[in-house]
Image 1 (cartoon, rainbow, N blue to C red):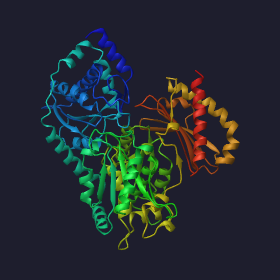
Image 2 (cartoon, rainbow, N blue to C red):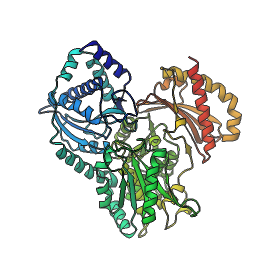
Image 3 (tube, one colour):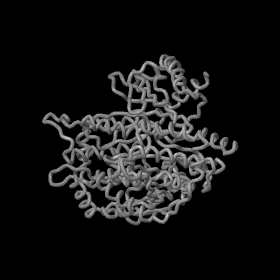
Length: 608
């Protein structure tokens, strides 16, 4: 390999983020993150091949007999096929049985992986999730149905770094032969069937009768769902068939895979086409009240609803915030557990079931309020789906019933036994709350929620989606993808940055404590660090948070937690994310806290 190629590879690696959440970079040739070109550079082709090689070798350590099996798929980004072209021959040359299904949604390939009865099986999924169109990335997982746990992912990263430094290793990548793709339709059919079956398992859990209750309700009062696929991998997944089979009406737009017509991240203006679709569908048929927009790999799906909130004077379609979506799913799924009897209470009304939810550290405290209403514990992990899934697994090993988990800051939810977010689960959680109604003396899901949250006055027999949303705890939270939630910082050492931030915070706390007390009801604070699956409360050195999340949690005069400010450097993008969350519907208060957070971080970053 010539010096130019080595330099090119090194430059590409320098701009690549390697984490448990995925290996990501701008793969598009030329390095423009908004370029829809299908071409990738020679350096990125070699990197993709090297990634395939080290994963194949990792799987082969688990082989007792026969071949390692690798399931392979990609989302609909333009560069996905080029990355697959670089990987498939390497996997084959390593002796793996390669099963490539073409365009697949992330939850689909993970459900498919669960069906492979081989201890040396795993999947490689090509996606950069919500990142701009010129980005791409690589996710690795096993037959557990989720991405590799952090410990295993970090081990693979180290093997990759060692492998790619060796010129002889890179020659193996360059000389691998191209593959054909004749079995793709067969593999795609296999992945679709596995996913369809698994979605039913996740949706109903052990309470199969709840499916019958939902279907019966839809016969009496149909519900319509719309979807803006935005050319994502979900456009060729099970959505239409699955929802229609349950009795929902279903309409969609932008159904051609790869035809990405607007920003990939399903937030803000990206939800406008879906809102327009819902308004048009509702005019023709008032059964249409709910819509969703997935990201490119289809593991997120933020919601649009038909809202009648403004005094019935002007109903309209509006997008829900990510934290609002997750909170709705939590209220619905905990009510589901009460309805099925999987959560039980004693004669004194206290919960006697060991139940919990697992969330990431910037999940809004509205979720804690919902869990508290049911007597369910909340545990937090660092940002990253792998961290939350690993935490939930640890809790189950300790005897907890953990049906729902997820990253409230990113929207969507994970419903056990899933190990990945899925918009089908999110839509069905809300649909169950709407459809499984009080009947024959048995309270429905919304009545269960109203009772446990001491809001019985909000329950009525003809409740709507708007009524359900109005019953949620009132919090205002910074949207994680809002421009004000993103900072660019110069300091490479996040521990040092947080230690300097601590000095600034302590000084300003003394200066502002009177104002915070009088205007916001804030009397006390506590510093909390989240690293991996561990949450450490009451840390004395903010720098102990390292590259993980740092939260300053605020309490009122009675010790009730009412607000937080939070920070963390992204593991998948070259940005620093900040947030604020407060028990209030006043967005000006949230902005005040967020501006304060930004000012302190900026000062800490400038004190290099």
